[in-house]
Length: 165
Image (cartoon, rainbow, N blue to C red):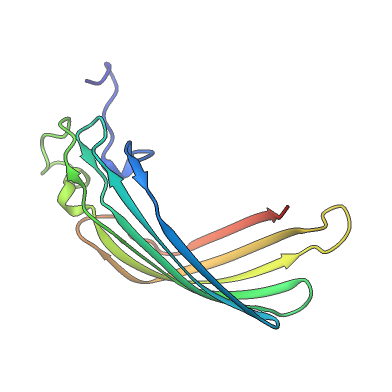
């Protein structure tokens, strides 16, 4: 039960799954000259239900990428990224009137999406920031197929500052 003035938020607004999840995966990387390519896949398997009597759907993710070093400091990349996720199994007993809030219907939370991300990396080879890398990637969805009323993605921008040890 919620404390006075508190409410249980719908499934998409929860911070985590609340379950123990198994996440097996694989990565293949190939390199030749200034180019590299690879394939990666992961599977998220929900092990049981959380303390609210439900489990998020299992998910499969895969990406295929190509990258090319343009200069000693700059590289470019292109990927295809796909994700498929299942509906919620079970239901939070707090949610009683499914017609009032579409995001609490567990049978409409799955879907599929394919994105095309393009990226640039800037590598710092010397000085105080030697070995650091600035990465920027912009992704546009090319397929969005939710199984019910869900927010769609217009674009994704990822900016990262990386340092390998």
